[in-house]
Image (cartoon, rainbow, N blue to C red; front, side, top):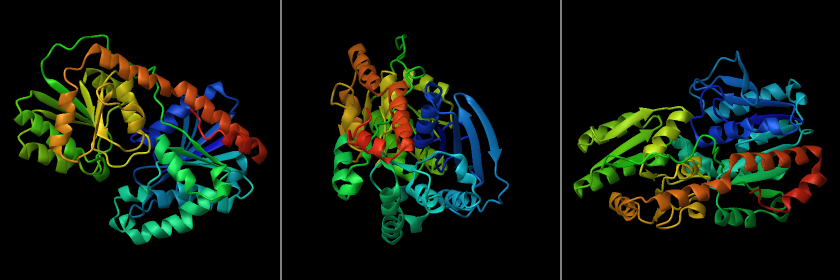
Length: 397
């Protein structure tokens, strides 16, 4: 099978977000399947389409000569590129299209109706809520997107994968027409446990080490994590906070740290590679997230896999893996004091808690989930009858 994967991310650099990390991890295990060719089509930071041939660890990068339109949203720029290339018979090289946002599947099906496409939704809420464009976050554009792009993409896709928790998946599935429900499948996030594993070394210093991971954008609410560290410090707790990730909010967040007199306690590491993420997680006592929207957080699973309890809100898959006092705490009130209180409940972090966290993460092993997703894609490529029987299970994990 020849598989084409598309997402509005740059596949050349280290993964910088949950979707790119999911795809990168998925492709790492593709050698164990009967896929002969994997193509990744994405978009570079300067809005230039990128095509990558990837199987296992090898990458052959081809950057488009298209003149980038930097003012255009990256997802729209990539959609435009797919429409244009498919009309040149470019799509005929592939047996299956695997798109990670609705507009990409909508464009591919529109331009190449004879090739099956699978849509993968990372969360059940509108991703436009996190857009850097204020207009896209408004109700008018979101309603148009839902009616003209999302619904047709779901309807026309040969299969719909949804990465979220069980409760939100069942709610999403119940809201779909009967014909769509039969082809919906829940796919949880996954973690590569070869990289993310607990530390064998005991901590020596008395400082409470917090860590948060993700793009520094509005929806991640990193300012809430910083303010929580400030509250803990005001309560007499020695605390440090490592922020792993970069984004447009960084300068504002650095300024907030200085204003709260936390410049010496909060460290901004920028974008770091996977090995550095694993190292920082192993050194941490608690992983903290302020995010108000997730599909099923890979960062959450990576922290748990490193034996680190987690504090955050009931978004995405948090309720599936975070159990009060055992693997972390779910916070119901969006205030720094509530987050700080939840962190304190977990102290001191015992070896038993760390072992429980790693044990829960083991149920989301990337080698298992990747293979099952690939099996699904192969069966969809074989024809609609095979895929229909497979989708009746409604769950990959």
